[in-house]
Image (cartoon, rainbow, N blue to C red):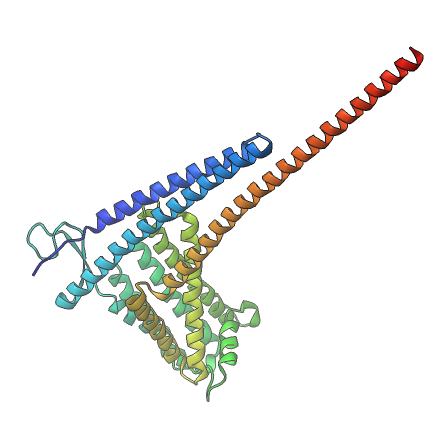
Length: 377
């Protein structure tokens, strides 16, 4: 059977090179824009020069977008081929492989691969972390040995610790039934309630000032800390993407994606917990259900659209924002050129009026002088 090899690193390098070409074209376009704004030629000639410069700028914008599209296509191709290879090897060997050499995995001594463990344990650990104080503590301990990335290990551990502290604060705040918080068997809404009420109850847990009990304040602070760690986790992932993008990703885009991805993750989690809680589910079941909903959404989006849900939403929002920004920039350039043309036309009319008035005045003065001389000689 024929085989072919995809060099992921080469594809990403070429994508980065196209990104540098894109930035160079943008630099040239901005230089032309400054030149057009600095043109001092008046009249139709000046308007024509500025109009031609604007046309060249628009052509450069089209080329720049083409470069960006080609670079994104190369990066996306590398991701898709890598994901496909990972799924194939995962199905055969039970673990994931990232191909980095010229040959396919398993083709002999020349094959250079890096093994990764399956994401399934992360899913199970996240579920375990929702099972009260004991589950969160167990998840923190197991995750510490499972996660290879030191920074991500601390972030995940901090998230599990916030769950432990939140459960402890709730137990103190409801000391008569403290044992329910050990495994998350407490029920927020016995008998069920509406989604709106459950949602308001979830949002109310962030209110540090809503309780005078230090246990309640600890629980609220732990909620804020957990969400902050979620933001930092996405920020760390986007920072890694920014550092390895070869200049294709701006720091502004990295920050924007971090904010949007965190918002989608946290918002979806709150909505799912509120939905399960509204049905009268225990806290542990609501938390586990929220994790399952999040993972299911990510799997579906990755399977059919190639990206998990937070990344899909953030890319869509950022791409639309950048397109609007570019459209506004082009429109402003057209408006600027049109305004310059109007101003130049108005200046020409004013100059002609002034010249005509001056000529008429000179003629009147000359006529009056000739009459004076003929009469009084």
